[in-house]
Image (cartoon, rainbow, N blue to C red):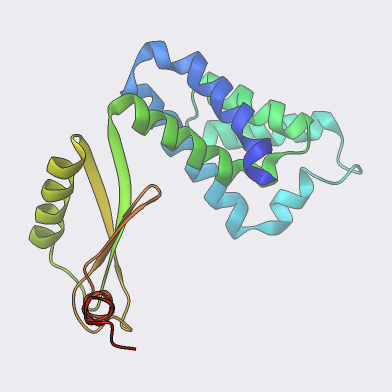
Length: 181
């Protein structure tokens, strides 16, 4: 349900900023992510925006203070004000994710993750990014995640697609091809 709530806010900000380019979209994303992190680290601060005992004027003043401290663009400040009016600041992380997805799409970037049994060095991640970009026909950015339960190989996930090159998957395919149970 939170994605359904977050989508209109992210789409509205995207449509306001898209004409200014990807750089501005990324700036807004970064700013909102910083505010979301502050709210995550201080749940009492978030509650101040949700309780009726704090007046709407006080809530707007808090948003203005945060906006000045973080150096928010006027558009992102207005988004926070609207989300505060509708008691939706709790969904700010989802708004950031959706805005990132929209900006990625505009930029032609696909994000994914690669699960590996041990940490990769940056050159290995870069090589996987290049291979996946060639395979998918666009820019790809993979985040490496260590999963010790993998004995060898890797698993790449980009969107709903999965490439499983783990030793476990290879053994399953081998067993299926030999009809070994």
